[in-house]
Image 1 (cartoon, rainbow, N blue to C red):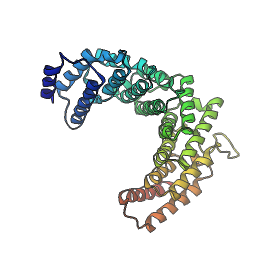
Image 2: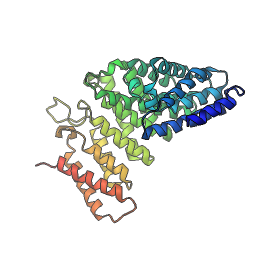
Image 3: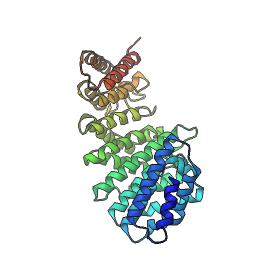
Image 4: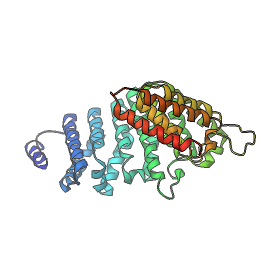
Length: 368
């Protein structure tokens, strides 16, 4: 590939200006590099190619042509993680600095492309561990939450979900502190936006529930002791329930997975209320468990059922199930019986996966 690039530069670089079409070619070339890097080590010539693009052409991202600005964002979004990590700090920061203002560009195609690029970059290790980048990226994305263009909303919701997924990865490191990445008010903004999107346009919902699940997974214990935040959590859980029960299959299995993510937080309030002698449960306990069991038993899609089963067995203590443990165990056994009775072969792989999932969950939940 480097030989092809050198030939093209020799033939055309001195006679043709940079255009959206040439940047689209850069994007395709970058995608080909990314595919090659997946299976092989990063080649020095690939890093050198990107350095040339950044030094020579990246300033086009701030030109007067909206088509060129959008194409520049798409080109950057095609960069692989391994290539980015091989670049120098100055080069990395130059790209990021160019993208921030484009997320608020006057042209909606540019805004959408910039949001997508930021959503790609936030998963890169050196950026997701940088609180300053995550904070600035989050602010840039949240500015688009009231955008009137659905494409921008779809891309921004996807980027925000990626950001929360990235923070889940960071939370596995010792010493992780969510407050280094976002303030309490910003946490509220993210959850509120995701909750609103979870009941908005269908195109936003799968990303919205991803955001809810990942954010609740990394939320500190003291947040759940705040009355206002508990109210927001209640609305967020209503959004999850709605998307577990209905909507596109992609949204439903993402909502089930989001519930599982939230339950992985040992401080997430579900089941019996702590220090309550009368056995009172958190108000969303019944709704979320009933939605999950219904999906497990009645949904025809195996991927939804697998994720529902996973969520139902995620809580680590019986208290987290409140008074629903017996009902949940009964439904999981019913799901097992349905698997055994099914003679479908079109999705045998997922049927077997569900059988294994259900069998393991029965062993985990059933009293000894």
